[in-house]
Length: 147
Image (cartoon, rainbow, N blue to C red):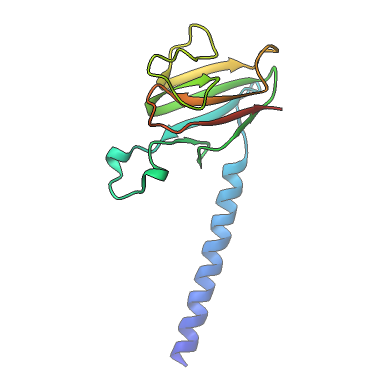
């Protein structure tokens, strides 16, 4: 009888945790937009130096809106605010591999940002796909697609 009661209790707890997780995940997928319609994109990174024992596959990568190195979809002519909090300087590139001097930076005069904001509106002349990356070649960035 006790085994049956504990089984039911564990099952109820698992169901409750699953419901909470699904609602939390749903909230994370919502876009963050400020009062004037600027889409806010949160950028951070996992750093292998403070995560011992974590496989390299998951470290030194950007986390975008709580997802590990996803493809980001942006809309042409829409304004974006990239909020960066990372040990790795972030910039937009025509190559998936970062350069130490950011010579492949798609935005002229933009200095790669580690902690701060990039406010950016997608211009008409921009390519339909490009990359976010770092001046640290070890960081694995991701693809950006204009829709």
